[in-house]
Image 1 (cartoon, rainbow, N blue to C red):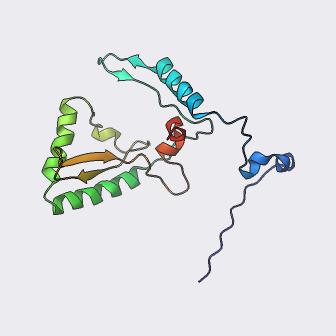
Image 2 (spheres, rainbow, N blue to C red):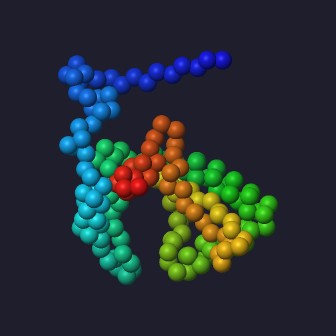
Image 3 (tube, one colour):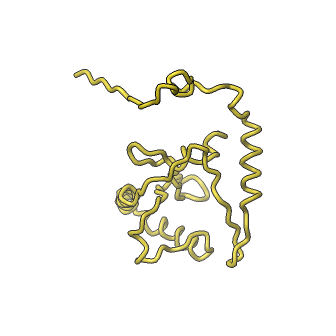
Length: 164
């Protein structure tokens, strides 16, 4: 079976003479890695604040072409169900849950009230990393590269994606 896919981008007639319309960027317009790092650091310094709960907050440095992240509650629930099934099968559910309970106690996390769970938003899926030989045999890893079909991930939308 042969499958052919053609991606079409609608352009104005004047855009046809611009190289960036076909993905070619002017190297002069591209920032060096050092310049990007400096701009990102400056963004963090300008947006950092110490809130009423005595915690630091900072705005994420979005890319210039950033469009809002899609609602992904369904994806996050599917990932959570899969993770839960794996943890129960491996008898690691209680250990994994204990990490999140500790993070709640340390105010690293905050629980979403039940009446806000179905609100629109972008959720950050996680999965366990199991390394029995390590001092921390199980730990959660957040998956900022998780994406909905046809939409960018958190990693693809934030300025730091250009720094890696």
